[in-house]
Image (cartoon, rainbow, N blue to C red; front, top):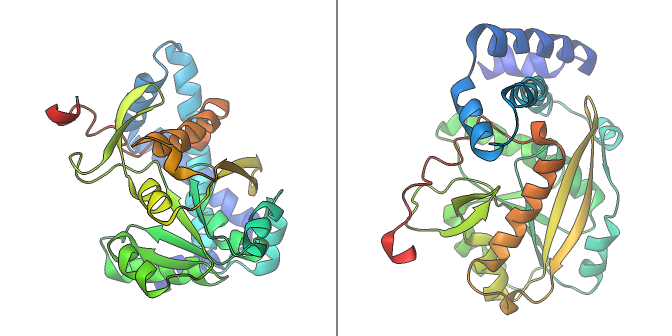
Length: 288
């Protein structure tokens, strides 16, 4: 599938890929209704005061973007450095440079918003700090390897969630920006922190806050935005330079609040097909 379909597809120019995306939208949304129940449920949960027509418009816009995203991720297998620089602009990379010049590692948080996969390729080229992405392995070993190869080719280092502690022990004292996606759904709702996300009591991974406090590292949030089809931008915001001042769960709450702020501005750019609230009614009694 990779060599006969995905790799050749990735070699096509963007304008042809977007024609394929238009066809994919018609098939996935209009014909198949791919995960439409999940998207509808999520939108009703988050936007109960919006009309049905307003939520349907968000869903329509989301699926258009989602199909573009799929083709853009495939394109990443062959995308060039010049294409990335033209299509992804970081407006204040000097913020990370300032930390790097002081020899200060950071925790860098973000969400599944706009095109986080393109960000993973473009960021190491524009940020003067080594970046280490903490990621969850794919269930298929072959595609996990191919995705890692794609994400790493312009400088991003990758460490699986299970190997994070070991990696930090081996690279203790080295300058790095540890990249965490903070809006993922934990596999076990008992091993997480509960926060308010988009107005809903939600379980969240604790890793970004854990390592920020253990290592006393500043926490930075990476905002993403879609400028137009195929073009994105990003800017960084310092959330805190004193992570130990926050009570348990406070940093994760703050980071997810930033994800929520971006979602409220442009709802269609978030990953609504994700079953983010599948554990929302499973909060342990001792945490209630």
